[in-house]
Image 1 (cartoon, rainbow, N blue to C red):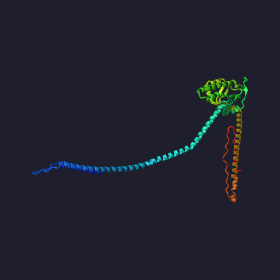
Image 2: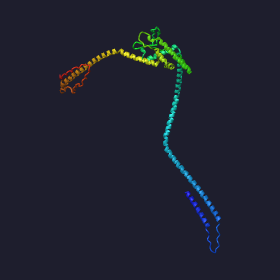
Image 3: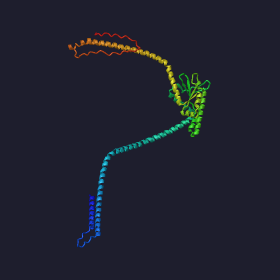
Length: 418
């Protein structure tokens, strides 16, 4: 509206200017015989018109400024109103979208709080477990040091090896067949005294000698060394000491003790897997050299497998030993089962005879006794109706065993009323 007024005012100013210009430039009419009228001062008129135009333009500028200001203010108010309405609508639309997020945030805060509480609660337990673990590690180190010191003693090392041997024997289930509690001393055919740690009895009456004395001094020094060269040197010394012990053990000829049969080899029990593995790693030919001298190197696992094989042989021997007794018991059991079957057959036939006798009794009661008893109510004695008992229709099942002789079927007696 304000813009239209401004344009109308500008148009009016232009029309006025054009009219003045036209009037100035138009020549005035000259009458004949009359003096000419003085012409208008164009310059003054132009200045006057210019001043009026400037005044009009100033008014137009003022009106345009006011109109623009009013329009801008109105547009700003409309924009703010529309923005507020849009923001309200967006807030209402997004309000529902933010609710799940706020709920999840609340759950997350609760979970974090629970985790923090659990952490604070378990922190004391973890510290206690760490303290116990440190104490156990310290005790284990002390025990290891004590064991290392104990193994340096020859007598203690021998007792430990015998104890390991005892554990393997018990684990294999061969304790009843191994004489390890009382070491038997004797001499071989050459008159050399022998005393194995364990004599394992075999099913054929022979004995298998097992020795559990192993040199470990060099091995223990190798475990304490930190220089690889020293470790290799001590391991080589350990393998050499073990080979020397094998040679000494082979010279005793344990298999010649006693007059009974015996495997012509002796078992050298090495009480630790690493003891034998490290010796063979340093001297790979040690195993072949030992077998050539009839000495079988056995770690705990190998000895366990050997004793399991012997235990299987004992089981087969026990079965063969009692095979005749089992056969006799089988024959006796077979005869007794036959007697039981005959008794069962007789019992069935007795039940069948008793059933027939019972049915005959029922026929007599129903044909003779009850008709007489039913006459008493007519004479004024008794009022309840008597119920007739039924026959037994279920027959006992007959025994049809192939081992029993076929008996003739008994002829059923004729039912009679008496």
